[in-house]
Length: 285
Image (cartoon, rainbow, N blue to C red; front, side):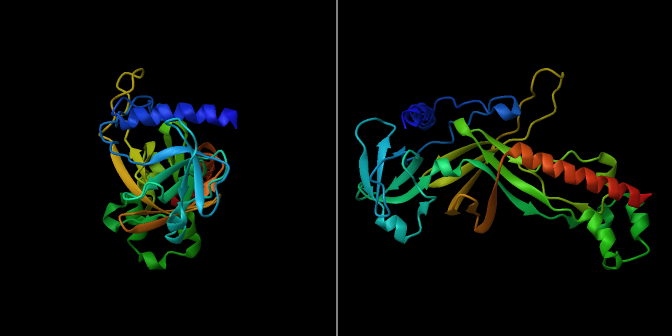
């Protein structure tokens, strides 16, 4: 318990710097800093550790700001399905308080439970004929797409796992990046949705903010080139369990499953892509 208190006391300092508009931790997974502190402001959530006495009707929080543990009623949050995750003693939690009665928590998010790697399955779609390579157009011009044998379609309709990994110090990592053979990718009759290059994440007013920024190629092979302007996705929580996360973004609901790590998820995706590339290349001969 003491170790966890020490860790989250340090984390509290990071959250304070964000809310005060100071410089954030560097997004180390892209090799350079993405300063978004000017945009991540106005967060009114209370952060702390869930303490003994937490139940279905109350949550007791040791605040990062210091002082004694504070008890908040979370009956309304339970009724409105706004207990995101299952807070246990020692967990890092974030609370949205009622504007008229600050002893009532209207939303409770278990941020410890939220951390980790989350993915969902993505399937490719067939390209328009005019967007296919000349070789593939020649192969396809004598028949309709519907006439393609299922065995041949299966060579290209390979599912992939997309998602993100939420780490300490607000760092995030994308899941779904695949090393594709340029020649096979050009000749492939299918295409996958673009992968978002997530670099940071934040809890903000009972919602989740994911920050993505594309990395430019290095100009001299040594210094990282500047990134494009960061993009912010603000998502609403629908459900969180140990193995399942459901989020809503612009009215669209997406479910995720927990994976052991982003590294293993990407390794698995690359292995499957390499197998598919080999079969597709043989089919094109």
